[in-house]
Length: 107
Image 1 (cartoon, rainbow, N blue to C red):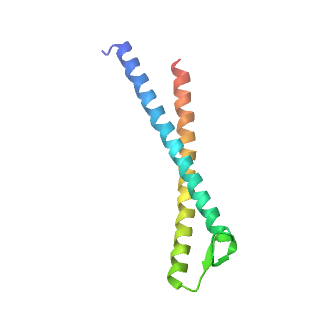
Image 2 (image 1 turned 120 degrees about the vertical axis):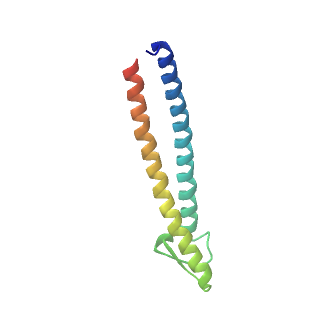
C-alpha cells in the first residue's frame, strides 16, 4: 500500500507542472493569434501594399503572377493558422477549467 502523503505530494507536483505548461501554452497561443491577426490586418491595409487588394485583404491582384499567387497563398495559410491558434486557446481554457475543478475537489 502506498503512503498517502507521498501520493499527495506527487499529485500536487503533477498539477503544478500541468498548470505551468498550460500557462505557457496559453500565452504562446495568444501571442501567435495576435501576430497573425496583425499580419492579416497589414496585408489588408491599402497603405501597406502597392497592389490591388480585393475583398478587404482576402485576395490580391498584381502584375506579377508569382507575387499574386504567393500573397494569396500566404493569406489563406495565415487564416488557417489563426483558426488553429484560436482552437488552441479554447483547449487551454477547457483544460484550465478541468484543472481548477480537480484542485478544488482535492481541497
